[in-house]
Image 1 (cartoon, rainbow, N blue to C red):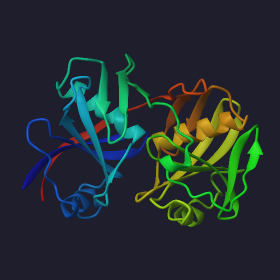
Image 2 (image 1 turned 90 degrees about the horizontal axis):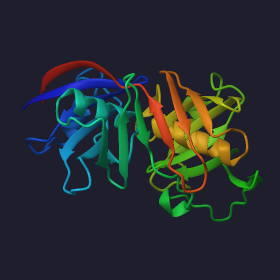
Image 3 (image 1 turned 180 degrees about the vertical axis):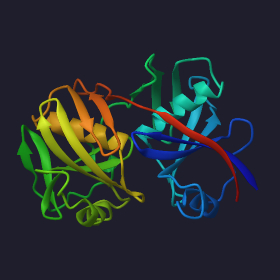
Image 4 (image 1 turned 45 degrees about the vertical axis):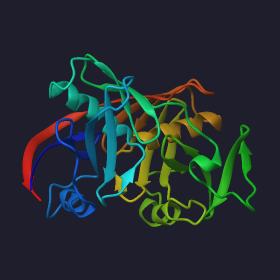
Length: 279
């Protein structure tokens, strides 16, 4: 089959975007693995699929697949590329849209400067939402926030629609992201896996971040990981309510007022090229 696609990135986190608003999405996991392969296919961190919404309250349905072919719950950088694509492709004339993911509804706003702001929803700290098995563990409280001892480090665990385990490090450049990241990602305490974040606090309004993503490995940026890191830092008393997150792929702005307030993320969304591939 011939497949038309668009290659995009959000702060270096790269995607293959597929418009399935006119024809049903029918790729097999094997075809998605080929599509995501950087040597034999197009290459990407994740595949984003745009579908019609079955709910009158949403403009589109937003599906995310890792380059392994596995469907996942959420991708913040991908959501920015999603709104940039649907506006540029003429699928909507709105600059403020709502989309349904696997487990939540997102509000996406295209700003005048081309950046996109995403209402990521409120963070969830219920262990069952990740899930996270804390049986037999005793957390240390930092500003009343629980930090859990796993793999010899202290982890903040929370969900941003997908699971995250965030640790504070002295220097992200020397942090053991590529060795410890995979062990945390597949640790038995996280039955469905977890995104492992490594956060360096540079100031109360600025952090540096690296994330070893579930099933994808380290990426140049992780939007939900940036949100999770900032929320953890605010809860632990290390950060203020508006934070710039320096990833290896670019800068994101994260805002959270606490409690059940939604986390707001603003960052770039860039089209790289359109293409067609035979699968």
